[in-house]
Length: 176
Image (tube, rainbow, N blue to C red; front, top):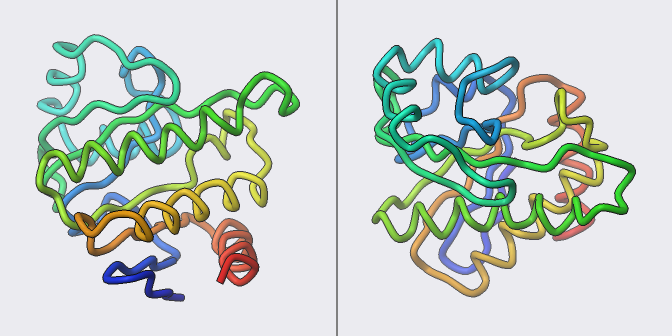
């Protein structure tokens, strides 16, 4: 599913983010940048040891912020590591932190001259963020960014399973 916003494109695909050839892929990292489960583990396994070595040099990243590394053995040029919030019922500023994680990643990609970026569904795995709500925040942030900026050409959401894809597709239909 694709939607054009100004000169940019938002695309939804079901697949494995480690196979993406966009300028950057986004890692749903933990604040220590120490690798982990889910997409974080998959990106570190596919990227190889040089990715972890760079993360160790950086040391960490606060929730809602993003940092960038090279991509090691991945097809993408760079990896943007962002830390989404752990969902605690929605009353601890989680929505703003999740929005900030996406926005910080987009701003960092643009500041680095990257024109295409692939996101996973940040915070929806072990961090427990409700999928439909997270999808709405992610997509609204991407749409708003493309409406106000022309420095990113493609924002792709790479959803690992059908349930995630369907949730993002339903939210994108609402926001069109």
